Amino acid sequence: MKFKKIIILSLFAACLGSCSKDLDPLLDNPNLPSTTTADVDLYLNTVELNFNGFWSTASDYGAQLTRQQLMGGSSLYNNAYSPQNFDGMWTTAYTGIIKNADALIPIASAQQKFVQSGIAKALKAFTIGTLVDIFGDVPASQANLGIANTSPSVDGGAAAYALVQTLLDDAITDFSKTTTSALNTKTDLFYNGSATKWTTLAKTLKLKFYMQTRLVDNSVGPKVIALITENNLVKTAAQDFVFKYGINLSAPDNRHPHYAANYVNSGGPGEYINNYYMWMVAAQKYGGTVNFNGDPRLRYYFYRQVTNYASADQNSMPCSVQASAPAWYASVPDQTTYCAIGRGYWGRDHGDASGTPPDGNSRTAWGVYPAGGQFDAGTGGNVSLGSGNGGNGINPIFLSSYTSFLKAEAALAFNTTVGGDAPTNLTDGMNASINKVIATPTGYAPPSATQISKYITLVNNNYAATTTTADMYNIILTEYYIAAWGNGLEVYNNYRRTGCPNNMQLSVGVPNPGLFIRSFFYPSVFVNLNASAPKQKTPGVAANKVFWDNNPDNFIK
Image 1 (cartoon, one colour):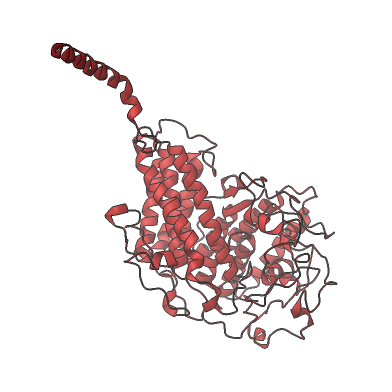
Image 2: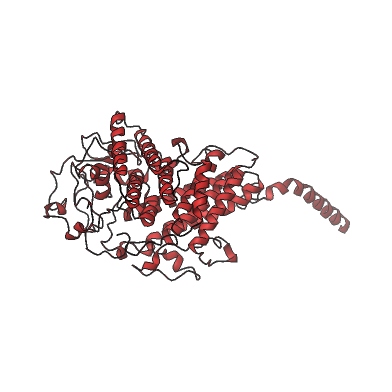
C-alpha cells in the first residue's frame, strides 16, 4: 500500500512538472506588465490626454489674469484664487503626466520604441516648464521617486528649466533613432506618430523656454540665434501643436471645454469673455469704434447673441446705468473700454466680482475659432446645444504664428536679423494667425484678401511710426496677444516678461487691487501633504516672482 502511494505521488509530481511548462507563460500578471509586454501606446495615450487637460487649466488661469477671460472671483488679486483651485492641475501634472511618462520611457526604450519615449520626454519637459511658469520653484529632479522619496523637495526654477532643456535634447535624440515598429497613428493625438514633427516641436520648445529666460541669462542669445539659424521650428500650419476636439456630447464628451461651457439649450454661456480683449480685437485700432472690416479674425473669435444693448438695464448690465468709468482708469494711457464696447459685444470688465446678473441670453460666446462654436454672421440669436461646429475646435498650444512673434522679439532683444528682422517676422506672424483662423469651416465666405492686407498694412505702418524700442515691443507682443486667443499661458508669460500689451484694463472694482499675481499659490495638496514643501506663499509679496521675471514690483497691473 505504501509502495502504491509513492508511485502515485511520483506520477503526480511528474504531471505537475510537465504541466508547469505549459502554464508558465500564463503566470505573467496583466496588471504588472513586464518591459517586454507592457503596452507603451496606452501609456502614451494617457500622457497626451493628461497633458492636454493640464495645459487647458493653466491656459485658463493665465487668460483670466491677462484679460482674455474674466477674473471675477474678486477685485483684489490676493483674494481671486485659493490654494485649492490648483489641486487638480498639480495632481494631473505629477500623477497623470510625469508618473506615466517616467513609467513609459524605460519600457519604450527596452522595446526600441523611441518615438514614444521621445514624446514622453517632450511632454514631461513642457509640463515641468509650465509648472515653473505658474508656481515658481517646484519638484522636478526628485519628482516621482515613489517610496524612495515620498516628500520631494523643490528645485529652483533655473535648475528645473535646465532639466527641461536636457529632456528636450534627449527627446530630439530619441526621435532620430531607428525604432522597431511605427507608432500607431491613432495613438499619437497630436502628430500622428511623426518623429519629424515632434523633433520640430521639441526644438521650438527649446526656443520658447530660452526666450523666457532672456532677462536673467546672458548666455541664451547665441542659443536662440542658433535655433533660428537651423530653422527647424514650427513655421507652417501643418506643424502647429494643437489638440483637436470632436462633437460627442457623452461617452465621452470630447467637445472643446469652452464650447461645453457656452453652448447650452437654456441660460446662455456660463462664462464671460473680458471686455478688454474684445475691444482690443474689434475697436482699439479704430479709435475705439467697432470695425467689422478691421481685424479679419473678429467674427471667428466671438459670437454675439445680441447685436445691440436694447436689453441692457440695471439688472442685466448694472454698469450701463452708471455715469462713467472709474476715475482711476484715466491713469492708463490709451485706456480701454468700460462696461461695453458697442454693437452688442457683451462681456465683463477685469475684476468685476459683482455677481451674476440675468444676462445669459445676451453674453457674447466663444466663436467658431478655437472653440468650435458659431461664426458671427451679424444676425444674433441665442446659442444652443450642438449649434455652430458642435465643439469641434482646437487647443492652440503652440502655433507657427507664435514662432514668428518670438523671432520678432528676439530680433530686437539680441539685435539680430538672423531669420529676418522684427518687421518681417511681425508680418509673418499676423499672416500665419489670420490664415489659421479663417481656414476654420463656417459656411460663410472668408474675409477678402483686401481686408487682410489693410489690417496688416495698418499694423506695419504703426510699427514704422514707432520711435522707441519699447513701442516696438508693444506692437509685436500686442499682435501676439491677439493671435493667441485660446492660449492664456503664452500671453501670461509674455505679459510678465515684457509688460505688453501696455494698456491692460485696470481692475474695475478697486483703485488698488494689490500686486499683480506673478506666480500662483502652491496647491493645497502640495503644501499640506509634502513634508518638504516650502511654506505657502504670502499673498501680494514681491518675492512671488518666478526666477526669469526680474521686472519691478509694479511693472504690470
